[in-house]
Image (cartoon, rainbow, N blue to C red; front, top):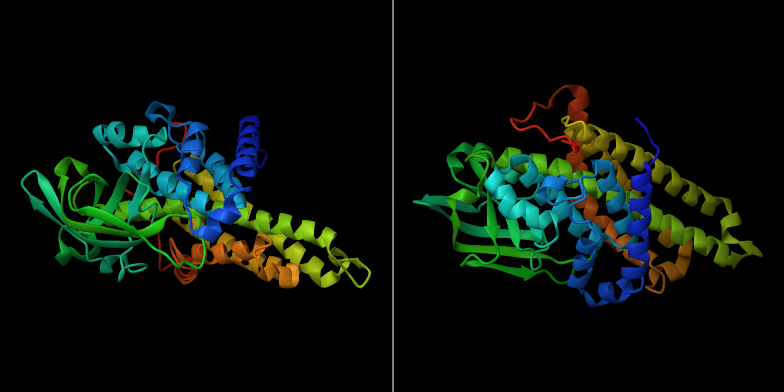
Length: 395
């Protein structure tokens, strides 16, 4: 592996960092306090080409590789988790899944405008009683002539009120358990569809998260993604991409914690010297740096496999698990370094701590990834090639 950024990647990193410094940092404290999701920022992300980073140019994207997407997610989360989440869901979970599983008609109708940022995509898998246990979902899709009739509910859906298109998973044959799950492209304008934002979240308050409702929603049969019964495989392949972006974003959160803590270490003095001179503070700073560097290596390793079109479920799971744990710990230490001020929104670290908890839960909890890694080592779990392999980024 080559760990050096290309000239294009260095320029991309600078572009996203400058964007975050100008368009996110000055306002994020207020947006977070008010629970406000800024739609205008999404439009600005599209204007600089960040809504289709690793989608081929032939489908309206920028044609960059997966580690370039990692750079984007890292720099966005340095500003706030909300906007990294938006790109993760739109690109990682939705658009990249359409690239892998969609037919040409679906790609032209849905992927192209999403890659250009003209339309926003989201992902509807989780339900009130179905999170880690995907087979427990209750949403159904019944075939009726040229349509499927969807009924059910999804929850904890990012971009619930902002997205134009949703990838929705529902049972077409419940007797087959997870082999009876299918995937559908659902447009917001379909009759019987509605959404509702969730209030009172611990963190990611500047993000748009909530519920989706399907009441006799007619979805054209042409909007079935893949074949009937492919839904579980499609969802798992989507999560391989989504988890990758979450892991990359966690690197950005560690970086944000480190930057804020270093600044405060030079600003604050106790016992006649900067607090950065105290060894126990240095220990926390050192752990943040180690967590950042180790997490990046795991992310870029997974990204390199994606670039080659190789199955990477194991590597992506490990990156997501470890990077999110490191980020959660870094945020906790950042608050500790700031002392009483860390408990106040006068400094950003309390927001980092609140935001750091969700990624440890979503897209596979810490416990799910722990089990996955143990089962790989013990030989209980082995990945089989999907019937549609991940397209190499440069294909």
